[in-house]
Length: 569
Ligand SMILES: Cc1cc2nc3c(=O)[nH]c(=O)nc-3n(C[C@H](O)[C@H](O)[C@H](O)COP(=O)(O)OP(=O)(O)OC[C@H]3O[C@@H](n4cnc5c(N)ncnc54)[C@H](O)[C@@H]3O)c2cc1C
Image (cartoon, rainbow, N blue to C red):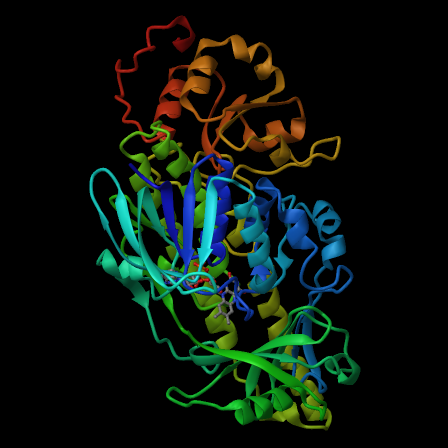
């Protein structure tokens, strides 16, 4: 007898998103988080296009896009000697009110209905909490620390310590479930209990973004008055004394400043104030609200993402240096990959390989993304600004222009990254047969749409202005292109697929733009919008693909029970 299908340890953004996804799929979930509520201190500030696509799928993208900076505040990335001093370079970006229309006009770069959205985790977490709690089968408990767990062939059992509240004393509860997911951050009790280690690079040193960092949350509305420049989202400051990254949180005066400190140094509030004043470069009042310490210089990925009935997602599975804004976003993509697999496992539709496919698909994705983040950190973290750049003469202006040229190049390289956001692919997944031929290049700054099995399904805007993705279902989708969809419901292979796949949706389109992207008459698309299979007939290969995508073992010859059927010819 279980209390719920899935226990989630950790109600940060990844745990909450996973809970919302599972709740929507009818899976019962209990989330436990040791904190008293959602975060009160900003951390991640960037929602990738892929994260926003997932948010669109669960119906919260518009709400998230309305949060953060005002809708007419351009989230530019800009570089200065100080905020009130010289501007060195600027990457202009569309304000959130214009971003979707802008992406439509720039589909050659951002081939997505949901371009990136710059908004703090501080604001996103309550939306995710609400999305999770909207489902009656989903309970989220704060002030609840998971002390440990055991697993057997049948299920998992976790011990949870619930904090004292006004109406009860502290207590311990045992919770039983079929599966447990550790979304419990970088110090993950779940990962350590499984005996799984992080692998990769730790403690890389750089002048910036490589070492001990302090994130200081402060209020300084006068910044907009003393800065002679247009407002920005990220203000990277390179003064003669220090570097700082100051990020606008709400566009109304709240900022978070990240500064590097020497290892072992413990700055106090007076130090923080001195450093904020140095970054601003003008004498204005400000109020420090909170601070937190973190370390830059990690590119770590867990050696395994699952053991038996226990899975790891988010920072518990990988730890990034935040350049490129990929840590939290990779975690959201983990959860999207895991949710439909847990659904199939809980509903008894999964084959033996489905659970293990999570590690096979997501571990390479984490290695890929940590490598991109590391490259961005090297590009900005090792930059040496020449002393001449602080001069007031013509040589100073020339030195600033030269540094600015590099920074402009760097900003595009780090922040215009549709390839990173949209190009994640599971080429060597056990859930499909790799197609012959070469996949599209996997580069940071260019996304080349590719409908090979394992790739994110390419997006198109349909002639009536609807996003192709909005025609897909919450479960699997069979996309029928051109004449292929006529009478498909009467096809036996289709009916077998509908019986095997949770919530199969039929999407039909006759649009040439979609045909050109997918290059097949039929495309089977997974609930996480990755391509499972494409082909020109619902034949024996389709039957096999349906089984394989759920992790069932498929004999290469003669083993499918329906293979003798005429439609298999
Ligand atoms: C300064 C900074 C800037 C960043 N900027 C970006 C960015 O721009 N883009 C980006 O993608 N990422 C960024 N990141 C990283 C991002 O914040 C994390 O990747 C993200 O929070 C990970 O989410 P998570 O849900 O996996 O883990 P967390 O947010 O760490 O949540 C884990 C949760 O588990 C709970 N928990 C832990 N142990 C237990 C237990 N035993 N029982 C119950 N609960 C437990 C904790 O209370 C916590 O709420 C940044 C990080 C920092 C520090």
